[in-house]
Image 1 (cartoon, rainbow, N blue to C red):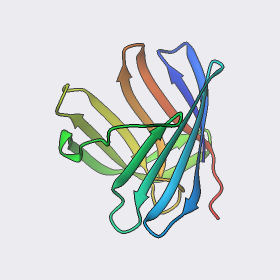
Image 2: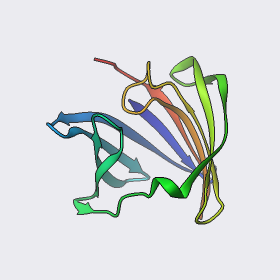
Image 3: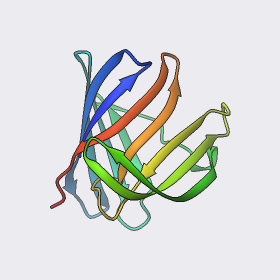
Amino acid sequence: ADYKINIGGFINGTMKSLVREETGEGFWVQQDMDIMGQQQKAEMLYDKNTGQVLQFIVNGEKQDLPNPDDQEIIDMQEANITVPAGSFDCIYVKIKNKKDNSEAEAWINPELIPVGGLLKQLANSQMGKVKVELTAFNKQ
C-alpha cells in the first residue's frame, strides 16, 4: 500500500507499507517513509492470531510496544471516503489517547486494503495536523 503524507499543510512525504515476511509467530510488516528527504524504516511483527504487535523496530532500534489500554474508541460508524486511490466503503474510527487526551481519526477497510486496511488517517503532532492518504495498493 502506498500513501502520501502531509504534516502541518507544508511538509510532504510518502510511505510504503508491505508484508515483508510470514513467520511461525506472525507477519512482519515494513513501512518505509520518506519525508522531505528524511528516511525512516519501521518494522512491526503482528501476531497472526490476535493482530497484537509483538515487536516494533524503527531504523534498526527496538521500541517499546504500545499499550492497547492507552487507547479508547470514542466513535465508530460505517462511512464512505474518497482518497487518491479511489472511493471506498469503510469504517470510520475516532480514537482517544488516554495518556495525553489527543484524538486521531482513521478510515479503514481491512478486507480490501492490505496491511491494516488504512485508507486515511488524521492526527495531531507538534508540527500540526498529520494527514495520511492511500494513493495505490496491490493485494496479492
